[in-house]
Length: 214
Picture (cartoon, one colour):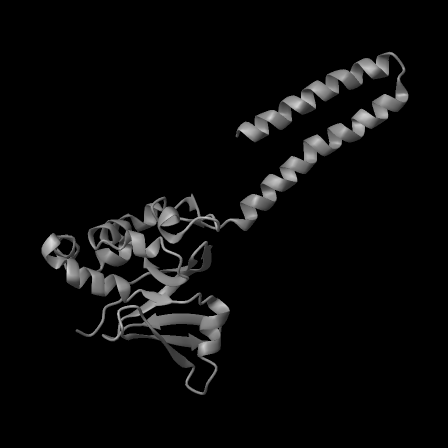
């Protein structure tokens, strides 16, 4: 916003000088300033548009690629439950670390699908170990973009797997161009948004909480 105001003021001031130049018949200077006004007026707008198009939004917030997974996730209104769980499990420093990590990030409505009272129980200190296991089941070491996930399924069955930080696997299933993730209990999560790039990895937004068998 401050940059936009800055460029607007520059345009106004340049236009004022241009008008005076035209009135005093300083044609060469007028032409030069006309070109300057064009650059000041339209180049910033193009830059702002490019930035807007290149930065994905999750939960109404921009996901800046120069920030880490935690720094971006805390701003997503669609991931408040996930963020609370990460904090309760003491995993903030891990997910803010160097990585890289691939995170399948369940939205709030995914947690709402769990049996009533499950989330409240998991957030209690006594459930920290279980909560840690569940959350790390959503994390894979390495940076797996959509194309990498697709590559894992280049076989007759259209399936592949990823070893999670929890030590057990998630299944990657492809049907056409659509990729889903299946946990050990058979729950299938659709990827709502893919390739949200982070400084220390990549996030894929999913619509279900993934649970290990035990």
